[in-house]
Structure formats: structure tokens, C-alpha cells
Length: 140
Image (cartoon, rainbow, N blue to C red; front, side):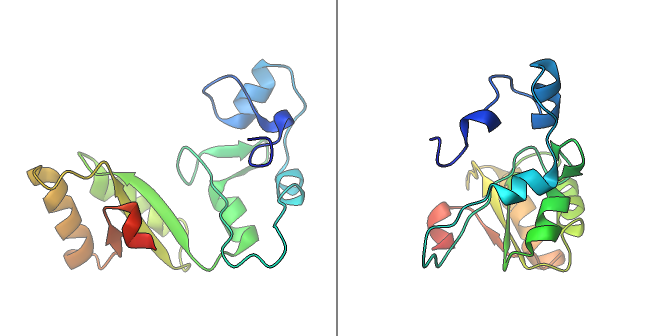
């Protein structure tokens, strides 16, 4: 676990990292520091950098996930979104924040028996031309 999230970046509070750091009286976090801490194994074919809380959720005192994505310039962005009520708005706003990067949406906890989930998937794929998957295996 410490290879994935160094101890000094592990906060025992369910808050955005800079908020947790402030409440725990830990040092301020900068985007440059976070980027400098990313370590890739030799000969990596696929690297994954995970953020949390949504594209505009703060990761540091001076940046959010969109800022990180813009600096890293990944080949592809994976947006994990709820499959239920509010999905269309949340997905479209989130995708707009990472344009022009290629993005795929994973509808989390998708239930094919749920009419709303099915309709959200249809609208995203057919009306908005979003690449959508509903199972992690589809990403492989």
C-alpha cells in the first residue's frame, strides 16, 4: 500500500487531501510535489494515476484533478461515474473539463435491469457519442 500511496499522503479523514492536511496540521500539498512523487516501474506499458472526488475536486492546495491531468497529458482518461440519477449532467460536465483528451466512462454499479441505468447509457452513447463501458473487463 505504501508503494501506491506513500505514508505521508495517507490521510485518516474522508476529505479532499488539502482539507485533511489542514485539519491534521500537516504540510501544505503542491501539485509539483505530487507529480515529483510519481514513480513508474521500468518498462511500464500502462501506467495508472488515480484521483478521487471528481475532476474539480482539490488534490493539493494549488490544484485539482483537471490540473493534474493537464500536466500529465495521459493517452486516455477513465471517468468512473454513477449510473443513476444525475449521471448525464455529471458525466458531460466532467468530460468537458478534460477535453480534448480521449476519455472513456465506466458506469459504476451498472444494473441492466434498472431502466434509468439503461437510459443513461443509451443517451451517453447514442446522443452524446461518449465511449461507455459498464464492466471493468470491457476496458481490457
